[in-house]
Image (cartoon, rainbow, N blue to C red; front, top):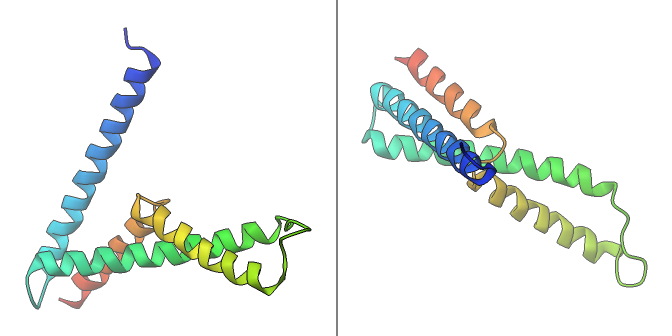
Length: 120
């Protein structure tokens, strides 16, 4: 019988394995449609573009979310906080996207591959 910790570890391992298999499948499809350069470079560029897109999307979601959070009265507020909060949200978006994100990058990668396949 598995305890809760072992079950969580198994779930995380299965999730990692599925993500790795999906990435390998996407890489294989990119390799098949690559016209220029090596497939590895094409895969990295496509993956980077997809993750960047997801980071921007997440940053925009966080911007709207934090608009509803009131600022601290004594030391908060003003133009400085708005600028800092915007930069902080961008970094949060990058960090979330680089650690797997919310699934937007996978869909963008799929579209990049689909477009490349249609162009051949």
